[in-house]
Amino acid sequence: MRQLFFLSFALPASTFAIQERARGTRTRPHRVWSSRCFKYRVAPPARTLLRDSSVQRRSAQWNTFRLQSLRNVPISGERKKKPVTMAYTYEKLISHVMKEEPVGPRNKVTVVGVGMVGMASAMSILMKELADEVALVDVMEDKLKGEAMDLQHGGLFLRTPKIVASKDYSVSANSKVVVVTAGARQQEGESRLNLVQRNVNIFKFIIPNIVKYSPNCIILVVSNPVDILTYVAWKLSGLPRHRVIGSGTNLDSARFRFLMSEKLHIHPSSCHGWIIGEHGDSSVPVWSGVNVAGVSLQKLNPEMGTDIDQEDWNYVHKKVVEGAYEVIRLKGYTSWAIGLSVADLVESILKNLRKVHPVSTLVQGMHGVKDEVFLSVPSVLGSSGLTDVVKMSLKPKEEKQLVKSAETLWGVQKELSL
Image (tube, rainbow, N blue to C red; front, top):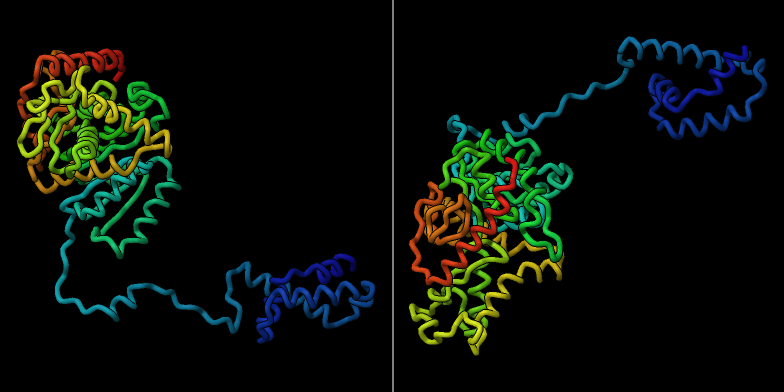
C-alpha cells in the first residue's frame, strides 16, 4: 500500500503529460505538474487514496504507457513529423540546365596561425581579392572557429567565395601559397632572436603538415625571427629554395620609405630606398640607392648615413629598427602593417607580377656571405616563387654590415637542433 501511494504521489511532470496526451488534452507539462503537485500535497492518507478509483486508474495508465515507451511503441494519436531536408526546397527553387563538374580552387591561400598578424594577413588578402579560397589553421580551436565565423558572416561584402577553417591541416590541401604566422608572440623589449628556440619547436609540427597536403605550394614565412625560421622551414620542408620565402625586410623598407616621405614631404611611392639583411636589429640601409625620381640623395648629400650628417638621416634608419618595438609598447602587438606587407607579397606571387621585393632567401655566395643563411635582398617574385635576385652594387661599408648580419644569424643557426 505504501509503495503504491509513493508511486501515485511522486509522478513527475512527464508522466502526467503522457496521460494527458492519451486522453486527447494537450496540457503543458509544467502546468500539469503544478496542479497535480498541489492536489497530492493535500491528499488524504494512503487508505483513502487507494479507495480512490481514479488514482488506481492513473497508476494503471502509467504502467501501460511506461511499457509502451520501453518497447518504442509510438503513443496513439501522436502525429509523426516528416524529416525536413534542404533538398526539397532546393529542387523547388532551382532548375538545372547542365550537370556542373566540381572545380577546385585556382588561387587558394592558407594562413597558419590566427593571431593578430595572421588575421591581419588574411583580411588584407581578402580585401585585395587575391584568392578564391582562404583557409585558416590554428591549434586554438575556439578562437579559430570564432575568427572563421566572423569572416564568413561578412562574406556578403567580400568576393572570396569560400572561407574555411580547421585545426586539421587537410583543410589546407592544394594551396598555392601558405602563409606561416604561427609562433610565440614577441614581448615588449624582446629581441627577435630570443624567440628562435620557442618557434623552432612549433615549426617542427607545422612545416611537415603543410608539405604533406600542399606539396607544390610556396611557403611564405612571417613568424619571427623570420630569417632564421625561413631557414628552418626550408630545411624541414625539403622544398627547393625558390619556394620557401621569408617576408624579410619588405616591411622594413616600407617603414623606411614612409619616414623618408615624412622628411621630404613627398608620397612614399615616390620615395625609393632599400633595407636589406636581417629583418630586425642588424638590418642594412642602402644609402647609395636612396633616390627620388632617379635622383640620388647621397649625391646631393654625400654625408648621408654617416655620423657627421647634419640632417641626421641615420635617425630614419634608427626609427625603422625601433618601429616594431614602439608599436608593441603602445598597443601590445604589431598587425596591420605586416598584414598589408604579406598581402603585397602574395599578390606578386599569385598574379605573377614579377615585382622586386626585399625578401628573405638563401644568400650564401652573395656579397661575401659564406654561411648557409637567409637574408633579405631585392628579389623577383612570380608564380613559381622567388625566381631571380637583383645584383646590388653595395659600398664596402654596406657589404661589411651585411656580412656581419649574416654572421650574427649563423651564430644562432648552427646551435639549432632540427
